Length: 294
Ligand code: PPS
Image (cartoon, rainbow, N blue to C red):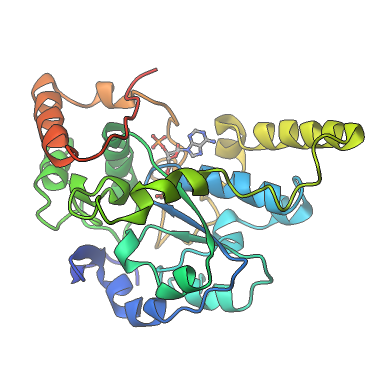
């Protein structure tokens, strides 16, 4: 698949046609109890969390981390086979446990087996204004996504939720989804519990002095390895190893700015006002607050 794909409705969620086609297999995916699901709205910091979690899982910056691209170490559940990259569900079949699984599916589309097996989940959320800007630039380097058009076109498409934007409009930021908020486990206790990363079982007791030093050295190493600049220059994390029919970083970098507040360089005053109004209206039921500047 090398050309822009149609947007299809999958149980009310707009997804690209190849995800629609593979969805039957995704739905039937058999999770294992020790799988860790990293769930996000696109551009929320998925790749960053994957790298942090994989470094923890592997106990440091191992050969695997430095030689295998992140998208092969942590398969993208709903992505079908493209170019040289097998489908997420196929990559996962051959992976040793514990597996890290990436998804952008909103809660209601996540395969039931993740819940049946009681899998651990990390949900990452980011302020919606920076997501929108990041997603705009991502469309330009992703040949399978719909044509982004100008910034103004993209802004309109996202806000109006007219289905031209994959995962659609503001209200599909799944954790904040107005419609699902009250019954959606993403948005209640699960969110906070899951964000504790569940490393308690995997780490030795931190009070043992030697282990404490080891853990802090390990953490320093992981913090350095997952800094924006390191990840930007690292071919395993900057998407330069991704088949160009999926993401083409020759057009512009995937690791773009990694900042809070870049939206100010793109939103007009009128767009900001409109966004704020829509946001207030659609997010009225959530008490979660995000920082849109530091
Ligand atoms: S995707 O395509 O949905 O998986 O994208 P995702 O990884 O969720 O989001 C990409 C944005 O995350 C930024 N990023 C980081 N920021 C700070 N520090 C680190 N280490 C880091 N890694 C990724 C990346 O630059 C994208 O944001 P923008 O605003 O476009 O720069």
